[in-house]
Length: 367
Image: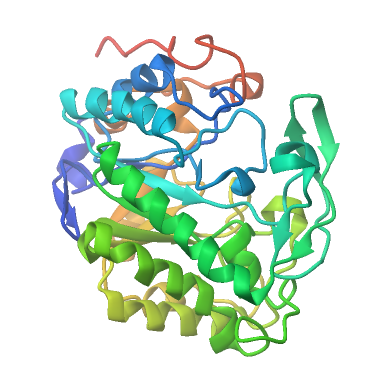
């Protein structure tokens, strides 16, 4: 058995803003679809996250900020008192196990279906541009619905939903929040000119298209302080309906990242490549050059194994590394990486839905 800590500081403490981590291994947000229609986390969630509390930081699964924000059945929310109470059980369990956990605030935007929306209304988006693909409802997989464009005077109410979610995350005992502005969901839809065809102050120029993400970040800061607010971006991810990239990724996301520096955020969480897919980057795009424009701590994400994590940490290209799917079947992933223990592999049918099986029944290594 090899102790990999002798060749890397991945297993040493680090601070991301005001969040002090025991190590540089982050559990990435993983949608597992174990909540009910009410979006209330259960005892299963508490057990699941506590089992993985040896991660330096857990970024909890993407969590709906409002009923309108839902795009998939069985995903948790954080707009109601009942949801707050459910999440409090999970955060208490993580803290009792010595871990840290932040809440990822999520609105899917156009990638939804009328059956998932309040009163069967159309999903909302920056513009009435329909996504490709299917989403999961109580009746199974269905094509996503045609969205309607948000009116300009609806934007303050949307931002207020983020603020309420941020406040609720604090009540629920989280250690911070992450603004989900990635994966072609609502905030990312505003950023990309492929999905934003607006002519108001939230559309057209790069400054306008990145405005909403900045306004959301600024609005949630008072509840937490900048040192406990992070952000997730994914400039080259086509997920959520194969959304095309922005026509000028370097200019658009470079402007956004430089603009975010004024907030002194806890971290930038970057998807390097396509979320859950390839790390290949299209020609003309340099994600490391974008990352380097951020003046705070950086979490690298997507397709990492230990060797890649070590290489990029040694090169000074990451402050911490997010692992996703490996945490599904390896609740003790940090120890397995540190002591070179073989990793278990979860079948894909264990990823989403169901109960305890494939969720909290993975064994801890005997090492």
